[in-house]
Image 1 (cartoon, rainbow, N blue to C red):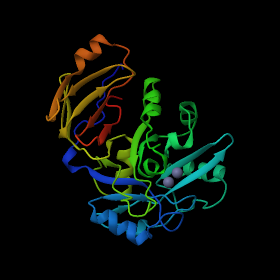
Image 2: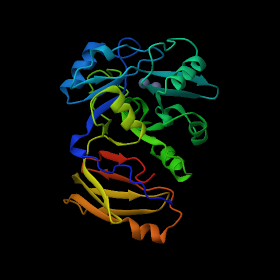
Image 3: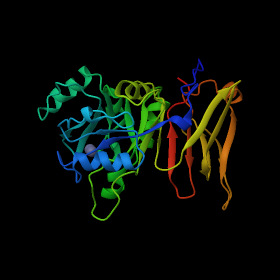
Image 4: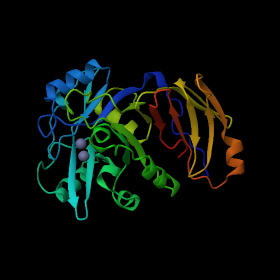
Length: 301
Ligand SMILES: [Zn+2]
Ligand SMILES: [Zn+2]
């Protein structure tokens, strides 16, 4: 980590926009109509959503309002041999996306459209780190709501950390992958991103996501993350653990005794970097008393 360029500099975390980047509707195998998805997410306090039906773009952008933004998106998939598959969420595709053609054609179109391409549920799919890093992928899902219900393979943090450890600035996403099921179980608001976009419109949101100026969460919030004079200070919702994670075993942390919670912590990053000159990344992670987590992206880029 040679140059300290703080990714979240100058951002007001209390003005971040809540969004979901992985949602299916009845246009593919989801349980909710597009109308229901819009209404339910808007009513739950979301600022934007990307509906990502399988291999077809559900066109909703025209229904964006000044306080709720819809970004035309898609999830494309290809099954490989040996019980492996690859699902890629493409956030922000163009008007001429070739729906329901081949994976190769749709993949090329997403690259052409400069969509933000995120490898979905890597544990559920059987993706390797090498496979993710070979592609034109901006990020990977750290948490996928429906994969938790399906077979408890919702987690992508291990793969993400390996990418970061080897010097790749892969972005980490939490998302619902809302399919409107299983019956009787809440299918949404399980995992989301909080984005530091200047405005609530497609270009501003996509720009902020591309820059990694967001964090992922399954519950907790960051109220502020500041970097000044070599010190990193964090304020957050009451947390059982606050971790400043580097690669593999490296960590600086607050672990609260049972019955106690922490809402702030300051880390001496200058001292850490003086001691560990070859540290490839640092990222913040918090966990609340219910085990719900939030993750920043790599803090210094
Ligand atoms: Zn999928
Ligand atoms: Zn999906």
